[in-house]
Length: 105
Image (cartoon, rainbow, N blue to C red; front, side):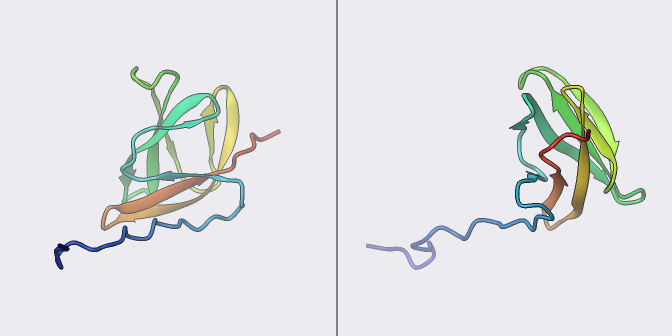
């Protein structure tokens, strides 16, 4: 017997817009994602400065370094510079940061 309060299907996954098809999207509020042999996540967002603080860890269970970035900045991961292509400030719990998947030359 089905319960009308519980939907029969899963909700559609969130689709984040990308400026480049092979870029990396870091969703706000998601645990660390593996990228460039490191663990990366958005730690916080500052509305006053429009900066996101990104935490980069070499090991998932160890504390990492933090960098504040905005669109056009480079984030350093594994001694490589990756360009921040876009960001969306968190709204209703949803926000994201888009990073170029290829390091700067």
